Length: 369
Image (cartoon, rainbow, N blue to C red; front, side, top):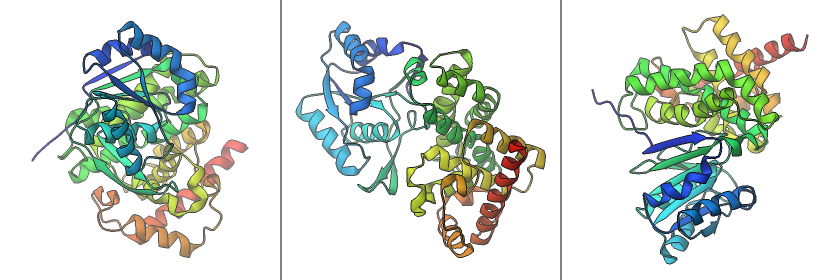
C-alpha cells in the first residue's frame, strides 16, 4: 500500500520573525516579487522592506487584485517574470496565498508564503482553490511542490481581526475527524497515497491543541497579545492542519463546506466558518461517535463563536427540497464525502444536515439559559 506525506521545506513561526524574511529569500534567489494586497501592504510594508534592505535585496511589489482566478495568477507571474524576479513571496490571506502558489508553481519559481492571518490552512499546502470573478469556487489544482518556506509572524496575526482566527479554528477543528474517517477507509489523500502515521498524528495533535487552547487564543487576539496559547493555536491552524488535511485526507466536513456557496446567503462567510457547520454535519453522520463527544465539540464551537445552525449561516430558505438538492450535490461521485468507510448517500447527507441544525439549536439554547 502506497503511503505519502507532503510538507513545506521550512516552517518558521514566532513574534517578529518577519524581520528575518530577507535572509530566507537569499536562500532561494536574488530578486523577490512580493505579492500582497493594499491592507496587508499598509500593515507590514515597513518591517518587510527593512528586512529585504538589510539582506541587500530590492523590494519589487505586485499588488493583488483581490480574487484567486487563473487570470490573476497568470498576471502575477507575467509581471514578476518581466521584472526578472526569481522568487515569489506571497504575503496575506488565503486567496492571495493560493494565487502566489499558483504563479510560482506555473513559472517553476521558488515560493515563500507569509500568512498575515490564521483563517485557514492554505499556507503549507501545494493546493490552489480557484474562484471566478463573482467569488464562486470553480475547482482546485495541486502543484508539483509545496512552499519552500512558510514564515508566520504571530505578532502580525495577533493584530488581525479576531474573526480570522475563529475561522481558522473552524477549519482546523475538522482536520482530525476527517483524517480519522479517511484512515478507516484507507482513502487516498491529496498527497497521492494513503496517509502516514505522521500525518494522522499531526491531525490529532491539531484537534487536541485547538480544543485545549482555542478559547485562550481567541482572547489573546482580542487583546492583541502573543502568548504560548496563541502560538500553539496558530501552529495548529497553519502547520498541523495544513499537513493534516493534505496528507491525512478530507471527508464530510469539507465536502459540505466546499459546496455551501450554492446557498447565496453564505457568500459572506469565511471558509472555516462553513467547515464548522460541515463538521457538525459529519459528527451527526458518524456511526461510532459518542453523544458526549458530539456535545463537547459543538459546545466548544458555540463558545468560540463559530456558526452551528442554518440561521447562524443566514440561510433563509431551508426547505427540505432545497436541502435535498444540496445533499445530492455534496454526495455526487468524486466527492470527499465518500472517504468514509460506510456508504454515504444524498439521503444520509440530508439527514445529517437537518440533525446538525437541530443539535446546534439545542446546544445554543442550553448556553443561553
